[in-house]
Length: 57
Image 1 (cartoon, rainbow, N blue to C red):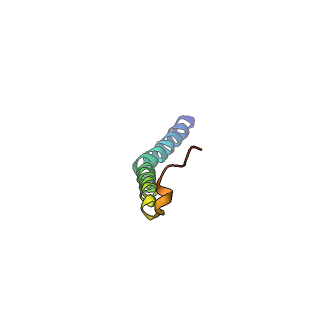
Image 2 (cartoon, rainbow, N blue to C red):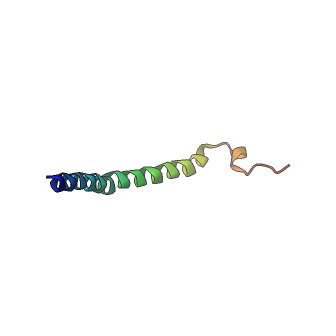
Image 3 (cartoon, rainbow, N blue to C red):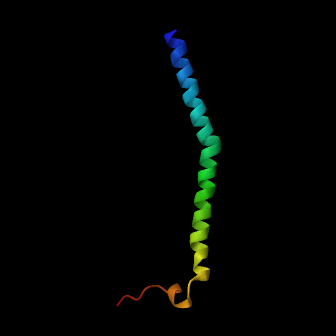
């Protein structure tokens, strides 16, 4: 009885890990890439004087 309870808990845990690896992780990776792409592409709409690096002095 105890062993089957432990086995069912491990199976549920591995189901959660499998769901995370097969569904959530790819979504997070694509979302992070999209956020980086938007952040880099935002420079297109900045005014020309804001595109230059900040002056040192």
